[in-house]
Image (cartoon, rainbow, N blue to C red):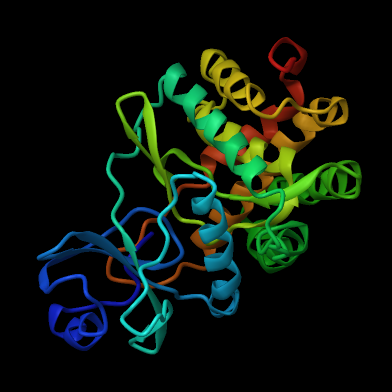
Amino acid sequence: MSVFTTVEPEHLSALLSRYSIGTLIGLEGIADGVINTNYRLNTTKNQFVLTLVEDPGESRALPLLIHMITHLANRGIPCPCPVVDNRGKVIQQLHNRPALIVPFLPGSAPKQPSANQCHSAGKALAQMHQAGLDCHFNRDNPMGPGTWQRQIQALSAHLQQHNPDQITLFQSCLDHVRLALFDQPLPQGVCHADYFPDNTLFEGEALTGIIDFFFACREILVYDLAVALNAWCFTVDGPVKEAQFSSFLSGYQSIRPLETEEKKRLPLALEAAALRFALSRTFDSVFPRGGSTVTKKDPTEYVRRLRLMPVYTWHRLIH
């Protein structure tokens, strides 16, 4: 979440008049995240999040995403369903962008997740995967291998000049995981695909919410798990936090035990997930997007991790 499009309180009167959620008290930009404009919206009745969807591809996917989130919420997953206006409409328009209002869930994102919080997060991710098995949601991964190849091509000239070994690292990793992971017949389903600590909410050790489903897609489930393990269970300098890793994986498998082939290919999935964010963060640093409050994330952490992935001794942690 970020603020790419400025919204002033006076812009909201017509929008809020379509709802029965009270009148505006306050509006505050939310700087976390990277892809859409988000504001914390306080009214006389409650707190909400106002989201303006910035990417045209995501705009086209909105009906699918809303269907998927509603499906998960109806099965007990703590995700915020968009608020329906007085005419039964969910998607609005504000500043020529699709706009949604969703409830503001209680809790806060963990800054340094504990082992217990990792266990809760892993369990919740598995519950989401299980709840999505009967969901008709066929959105292709918007940040999958095809996008990675296009990003490598776009970055090629810049990296050849400034860091040529990095472009070789990216391409060789992509070629490897595409064949050995994404071309394999592994279980697929609804994936969050961006399950970072800052996309969860906790009150103490208890998970109270999962947010920001804008990268959600139908993908290999073990890849979604690997995205989460990368986000929750490694230090900035590269090494794995073994207690957090074991707790997250244990929490996940308490709900959905991994199949033999998934366990075998989890190290590859971890490498693929590291590549995904090394690439996207490098791309965003070379081709930055403008906005009044935009979160820019350093790619160094994920590039370093991608280099280290092949040397980890995974059999001690994956069981």
